[in-house]
Length: 154
Image 1 (tube, one colour):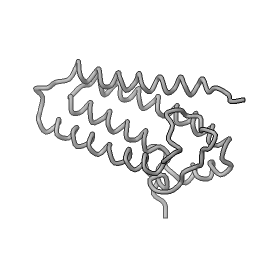
Image 2 (tube, one colour):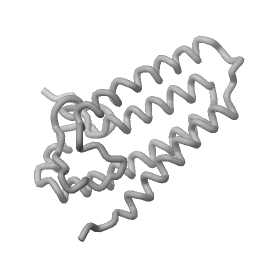
Image 3 (spheres, one colour):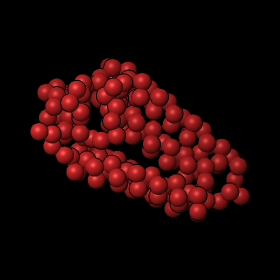
Image 4 (cartoon, helix red, strand yellow):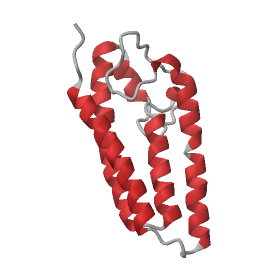
């Protein structure tokens, strides 16, 4: 019998609401007449957010799921971008949100980004607990690999 991960569902819903808050705050409280160089910097950050997303999606393959609970055939991915980073898709969302807030020059959007970061950190912690139960070597992997930012090791 499959168990339902209600907490994972709640964190995923919170993530969606947090991202909507970032985008909405930037849209409604942005300064389109602000300094051009600031908007350009935000655009560059949003463009850079594509890199961890593309690499993460490529490396996850069939293990991709919006839910923290690993599916029945889940394999722990530790190659590619996952050699250095446990949550590249979350990093991509964070960079997108920061870039959007800067591009729109919106302090409320930046505040919503901080809230989204908190939500993603809690969702990642929940996901890691579940992965730790499923994969005996997850703890060792987590100790040598960065969460949202790469941990460079020798």
